[in-house]
Length: 138
Image (cartoon, rainbow, N blue to C red):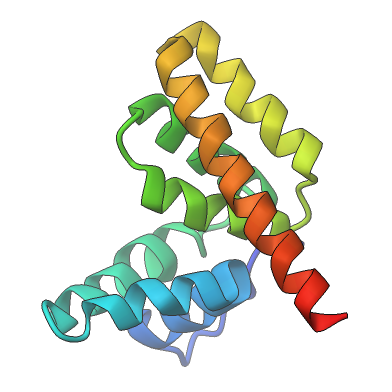
């Protein structure tokens, strides 16, 4: 996948919604929907800043941005729900399961084994859920 296309007529919110849908697909929609009853306005911030402003900047394609995001969330060690969303996004933008596993394993060097283990278990959960969805669809 390449860099999201710019449309000068789009607002930050419109651009963010479009980019989120392109990158995260269903997983991103679930995050936004989960905020509806507690902080619907926060969803606007998620659309506008990370996706409308940052992800849509020139300089890195979406695959590179997801590599960075998966690495950062793994290194944090305490963001499993967000990491799972971005593992799925990484797959959506062309990363392979092996590449995602390697990204997470690389974080053991910089963030420690516990963070890498947490990341690997998050990836295992995402991969298993995807396998189940694919088997159910077949």
